[in-house]
Amino acid sequence: MIDWEHVQDLRDEIGAEAFGEVVEMFLEEVDGEIDKLRALSDRSNLESQLHFLKGSALNLGFAAFSDLCHKGEMASAAGQQDSVDTNEVLTCYDASKSAFLAGLDRVIAA
Image (tube, rainbow, N blue to C red; front, side):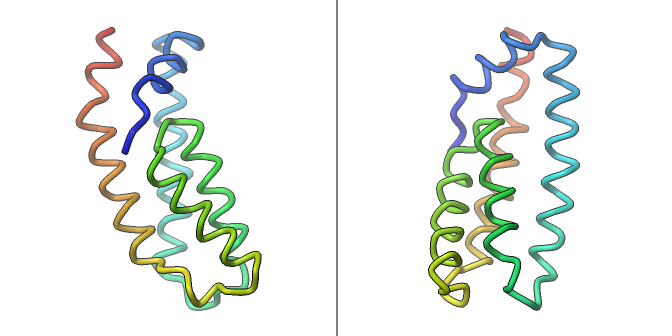
């Protein structure tokens, strides 16, 4: 679900302090987009929403969530927005976020 090696590499690359700031910014931005997705009534922007979420997820190692966003993005690009299970996307994000936060102490302590 989480690519911990990528997370650790990011922390090592930017340092512990900057990593904490990146995590905070990521969660703030993505939670905002997730809130929009939860309230979604018009699927015309679904492709761009999923593209943003996919890229953000990749940056912080949310591998399963990123993959699911990519599939939804591709379906939306093909005009099949109605086939995208946004509840599955939301559930995957919630599970990924929980797993990430639960394992974050290991990365910070490293």
